[in-house]
Length: 239
Image (cartoon, rainbow, N blue to C red):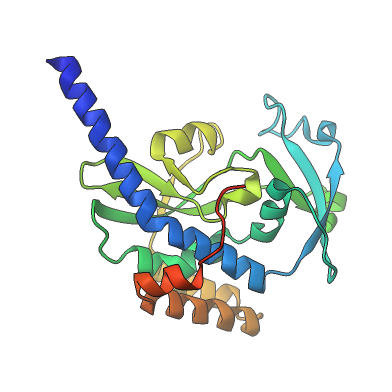
């Protein structure tokens, strides 16, 4: 009897996971569309991983790729994983800002939507050329969205996680903690109202970018599900 109930619970959680993934995939497509249209292109040059073997996050990690990046006005062709990382690089804050209000609108199976920050555990690291030279800290807090379903199972929607070499945008909370968060990373739940104010202050010196993300936020929040699907038709999430 116990095994039967466990199987039922597993099946129900799987169904909920599939439902929430289906309901949120258009937000991932929206973000790829935004990055393709708005984000300045970058070039990438691979770095020797030994340069960062003493970094606190990579001492016990293997297989992590490091790239030095810089802005460019020219088109460059890269393997899909690196190309996806380059266009989503450093967009986590904007991705949550633009989509959070829409995602917070009622979704079936969902009871709580939270704006969170964590310390990432990247498989691919993009480092600005000036940061490489200055030897500054190469990683900072990462913004994403945590969703709690009606059965209390939890999931993460990470619309910019491709910048770290992640192959997906949707994870169970346990999977995300084990694979995508640095060891002993804190999880901080942000107040969306406060974050919105701080973003306006942060970009006060960049009025054009602030106006752009405010416009996208408005359009995404007001769009119907059908319109979101239509505007992102043809955008592939798989690498």
